[in-house]
Amino acid sequence: MLFSEKTFVVVLKGRYAGKKGLVLSSSTEKNRYLVVGIYKLPKPITEDMNEKTKAKRSKFGLFIKSYNGGHLLCTRYKSDLNINAADFENFKEPEQRKALIDKLRKIFEDGKKENKSKWLFTKLTV
Image 1: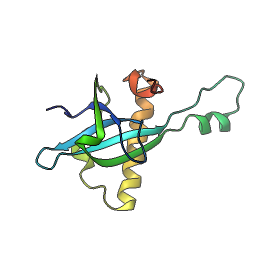
Image 2 (image 1 turned 180 degrees about the vertical axis):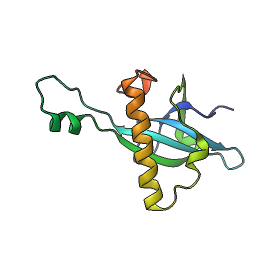
Image 3 (image 1 turned 90 degrees about the vertical axis):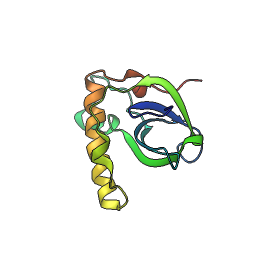
Image 4 (image 1 turned 60 degrees about the vertical axis):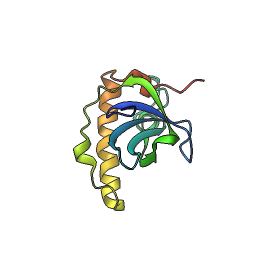
C-alpha cells in the first residue's frame, strides 16, 4: 500500500496545499486517509527573548483531516513519533477534535525536542 500508517505526505489540494502531514490511518475501500499535519512551524528562538515570547514562537499549528488519496503526495520518509491510530477514531465533534489536536501538539513538541522525524519539522523546499 502506498499510503501506509506513519508515512509522511505532502498535501496537494485545498486549504493546506503544500503542507507536510502524517498518515494516521487508511481506508482502502474508500481511498480515504486520516492525516495530521503542520500548517505553522515554530519560529527560531534566541536566548535574549523573554519567556512569553519564547512560548509564543514555539507553538505548532496542527490540522487533522480526512483526504482522498489523489490529493496527497507520498514521500519516502517514515515517522518515529509515538502515535497510535486507534486513539484517533472519533474526531467529528468540535470538542473531541480540539482535545485530539492538543494531544497531538504535545506529541509533536516532544518529538521536536528529541530530534525525531527531522524532515517533518523543516520548511518544505521545492
